[in-house]
Length: 198
Image (cartoon, rainbow, N blue to C red; front, side, top):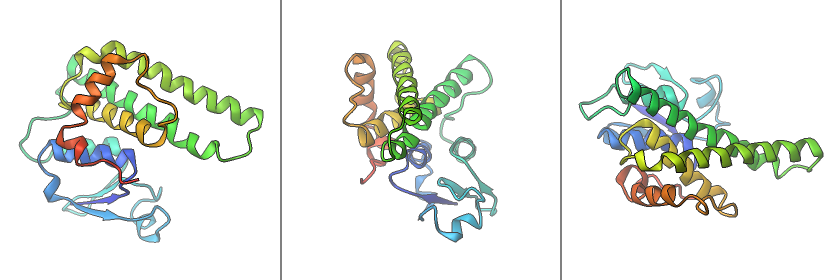
C-alpha cells in the first residue's frame, strides 16, 4: 500500500492517524510528492494528496474514501461503526472536522491576495463557519472519546491544523471542554506521531 503524502496536509494527517489507530501504519509506504508532480497527476486526475494505492494497484482518493478503505484492512476495532446512531454521529463529526479544514485551507491563499470587498466577505464567511463548528464541538466535547472513531480523528486533525496555521486566531478561548479533550488526545500516538513539521 502506498500513500501520496505531504506531511503538512491535514487531510493526509487524518489518513495517517487512522492507519496508526488501526495498527497498519507499518504496512504503508509514504510517498512524499508535490501536487505539481506529473507522477501524481498520472494516477489522480485531481493531482491532490492524499492519494492512495492499494496492494492490488487500485487508486483511491480523497481522504474519506481512503479512511474507509483503511478501516477495511486489519483486525483492529473499526473507526466507522456499523449502521445506526453511532455511525451517523461518527460520520457527521468527520464531516464537521473536514468542514473546518475546507473553510480554513483556502483562506490562507485568500489573505495573501488584494483585499477587495468580495474577498473580505468570503474570509469573514469562512471564519464564521469555523466559529460555529467550534461551538458545536464544545457542546459535544463530553461525548468525545480517545480517537476511537473517524469523526474524532477528523476533529482532532482540524484542531491541530488551526494551531498549525492559525495560531494568531486562537480557538481555545470559550471552548474549555474542547480544549481539555484535545490536550488529552493530542498526546495519543495517532496525533503525536503525525505532527506537521512546518
